Length: 324
Ligand SMILES: *Cc1c(COP(=O)(O)O)cnc(C)c1O
Figure 1: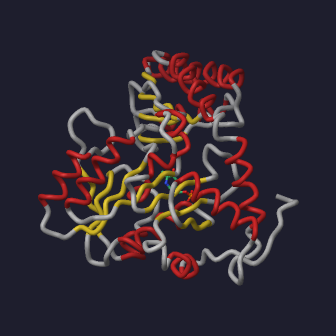
Figure 2: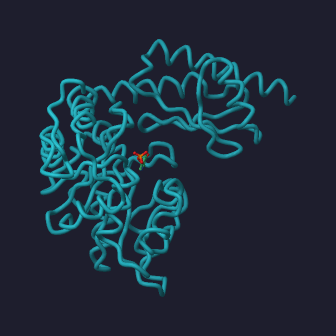
């Protein structure tokens, strides 16, 4: 980052940002890619470009756009969010569910959004063929598709399909550099040149025009070069973590597909479990009163994950003992 060649990305371009955008185009198989300070801004820019004011966007009811972007779709873009009802036994939306939702509502939709991997569901994968099937349904209703791929890198490593393959059926795709890849901030929105034509103006309007942003792009490039393949270690660590804590204090660890382990508690004691784990040096996230989330990442190696598993198991057992 300190050595990054920089320019002015608001004026006439920053050379390191241009390198990052070119690399993102290659990896994602899209014509145009644009660097953003956050994934949230990149998602909202996609909505601005693809959705129409006064219509609905169809999305997963537990997606980042729904749960974590502070109603930006309504406040900034003027669209209504329509959660797609999950089919029984499913943890994420699929083509059949999108087809059902797309055909029953009177309000017009203008966009379908998909998240892969799906954070709220627990790092759950959608396969390339299922993404294609969802896009087919979208196309039948004349809707473009936006892929929130903050963790698309994890999906690629876990499925063996390239990022470009996974993004092929989506009009636009957002990828994040600040999750598994370990950069401090940053995301890219990529898509066909026609769809992306106004993206620079929208980014500027949202306050995302950054000047000597090459220092940030350099960190993202480092993550792309050095931290993509190693995501498999995070996935193996998540498997080991789930095996080690499953059953402790009556809790169940959901078998992870990638780097997120959801832990279901026998009682609504999530806040207390978080406190106990924190006191033992492990940070977990609150998900629901009966569910907490653990994430494996590049700062914690296999030995560290074993220590974390011991601490979490102790926290779960102490909670169980105090409830008895
Ligand atoms: C983190 C995340 C985002 C937003 O990225 P920020 O850079 O934190 O704004 C969007 N979608 C998903 C699925 C995420 O996990």
